[in-house]
Amino acid sequence: MNNPKIKIQGLDLHIHKQHILKGINLEIPANKITVIIGPSGCGKTTLLKTINRLTDEYSGVKHSGSITIDGIEVLNTRNGLTEIRQKAGLLSQRPYPLPMSIFNNVAYGLKISGRKRKSALRPRVEHLLRMASLWEEVKDRLNDPAASLSIGQQQRLCLARGLAVNPDIILADEPTSALDPLSSQAIEQKFQELSGQYTIVMVTHILRQARRIADYVIFMYLGEVIEFGSAEEFFSNPKHEKTKAYLSGVFN
Amino acid sequence: MKRVEEIFFRTLMYGAVLVITGLLFLIIYSIISKGASSLSWEMVSQTPRGGYYFGKEGGILNAIIGSLYLSAGATALAFFISLPVALGMNIYLAKYRRMVNGLRFILDLLWGVPSIVYGAFAFSIMIMVGARASLMAGIITVGVFIVPIMIRAMDEVFKTVPRGLTESALSLGATFTETSFGVLVRQCAPGVVTALLLGFGRGIGDAAAVLFTTGYTDYIPGSLSQPAATLPLAIFFQLGSPIEEVRERAFAAALLLTLIILLISVITRILSNRFNKNRINF
Ligand SMILES: Nc1ncnc2c1ncn2[C@@H]1O[C@H](COP(=O)(O)OP(=O)(O)OP(=O)(O)O)[C@@H](O)[C@H]1O
Ligand SMILES: [Mg+2]
Image (cartoon, rainbow over all chains, first blue to last red; front, side):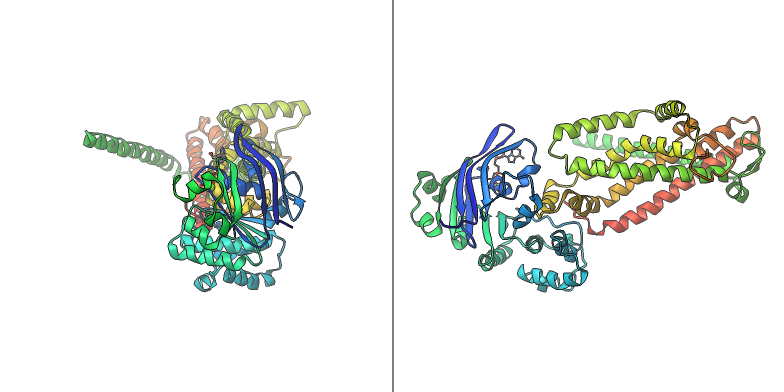
């Protein structure tokens, strides 16, 4: 692959002597949707959080190997942690809106990424809420607490807030698992629209969802990447025995 | 069997509630019944005449003002130390779990140390450097004495914030400081206010730590380097008086102290409920 957006080489990660990620090598293409699948506990969330450097905040984590974004090392560096995190935004499994109003949740993203001018905030917030397909539902209640939104709306709010820091990459950890079918569909659609401008890496347990939106698929098993390929190949012609077994539902 | 259990615990619960509220009302009743008659405008608007020990004239304005200065100063001082520490323990240092738990243990020990020990310790330092009892010395001593209380009180509420919420801010690229104030303090505003109040209450109610460090005087302190009177000591000295009227004034002072604490509790409750609007419930 020429010019991968994210390049992971020989990534190993231990938590308190437990070997969680084992020798991961991956090249994730730019402006595509790459889906990570694999049984529970195989390290999908940990992999996403390592790319975002959130694993730095866990106790007892040791890693080796290298991760680059646009050719720039992001794993073995002490500098620019906030920039790295802003470049690769993380959408968590369940939405965590901040304890402030709907408007301020999005504005918070703008503020911490350095856009502080009050007058510029309002149109930017509207734009971002529109991008997350939430504007129509909240435009009359922007000052209400974010907690007053439904879970599906909260997840879209978190998406808007994530987009506010102007990332290149969206790391999404089962973003639809807490949502109803309609809200899930909204997020899926959004991701497909966004994949033109953003590199999206998404974890899912729903194979049908993976089939619907994936450009590339990664299959992980017990901390290793077993198979990685374009979606058509991956689903129509899986090479590895374990992948075949997983796709046929043996692990579920 | 289930029913017996149910009845047993319910009786226990109601019993406990009854005992506690009963005691509370008994205390308040005895303070009011003994102090209300001496409580007058003169008491709260004048400084004592004829000395605090034998004097029946004048008021205890010196102790009211002194106590307010002292505990406000100590609370502010302790707050500026405690907030960053409590935040740090739950964000910046959160991954060093052993260290944070060790710190908690030490703070709990310090919480348990009686205030007279802080007072004696501060006094010995004051003798070493040749400092005299002053408002400043009292503020520092009481401030230090309520720091562990405030840190642990805030720490306990910050601990309840789900990891995912802090992570969601950090993963946006928020710095530790931005996460602290954008997430923890906002989410826990009522708890932070409670910690503040707890510290203030301990400060204003304490007699032992201020005895050697702040001294006592019939005058309103004009600067930080002067000694100051405090309400608990006003109660203490007046209760020791052989004169019946002076002892009654002690109860009036106690009533005032109770009223001040009550007033501050109510105000902070109202304020903290206003912060509560945007809280996320998990
Ligand atoms: N903070 C932690 N401390 C210790 N072990 C951890 C920690 N986080 C994750 N693990 C372990 O790492 C392994 C991988 O966890 P991870 O959350 O990445 O799995 P996952 O593939 O996302 O699973 P799921 O599909 O259930 O979300 C698990 O065995 C888990 O127990
Ligand atoms: Mg996971």
